[in-house]
Length: 395
Image (cartoon, helix red, strand yellow):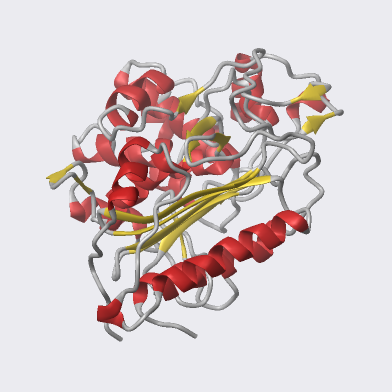
């Protein structure tokens, strides 16, 4: 199947990518692949707008691109069902678990390249206080693959835990569900602990490290962690919280444990716009290159995005990969080496390294309540349309 590696952007698209003053970057017909890209992108618009009408989310932003170019960058809907403020590519969303790959895993990749982080060293070698005997053998690699044996989640706020240190102490003390490397169990605790390791190595608070070494170099000006306790009406709101904070959560991290950790955590807490996430996706689609220069080594990107143990899970190091034996949020057409991640608030990112195609979806599907599963229908359909538009396969 022929793959068109590059497309020419119109003047309007260039403006949208560089300044985001327009809500959409559009292109014409992809003649080399025999695909009417404009028509397929119209189907993207119709898909997102249909699910807004169905109540999947009040607002969304989509970025679709290939290698170093973004071909569609569009905002849809409004901040809430009651609001008339439109979502644009510059609107800032709570990324939820995309934090795990955009911030935490990327920082781990950088420190790995600098020989400051050894994937097979124990956590305790970096964090002497991580001295629970049953956890003594947990390695950095096991944190990244979610095979450390941690329980998936605890609602600490419901247990009366109220401080950052109390959350950390609890994670260190909680018994494991299984011995390390015995089974895959997706756990936020793995990434929370990993950030503590990264902070011990760098001597920096993680939000500062990520800003200086990831977001600023990549021109991700709207991306960062945010303090708790202060709302920001400029940010797309998430949930009407009637169980813990008892207010509309807007500009503060939605995840309760990240909130207790002060807003900066390895598993959640990052905020960004679709424009910024597209920059990051483009970096990964180009095997770690940004504006023609290496930001990450391609061998590091390959290592961290290749599934580690197909018998145990679809997980790579930090990243997820396309499931081989069950439906994936990456849809049907993204290739077998595709990697990505999803976020609880209604976010996702998928990259196909063999075609350079990427798709980003940011939504606030938890507004007004998290009891809304429709996002699971949107993600694969959007990914399929993205691939059809840029991969030359219309089905």
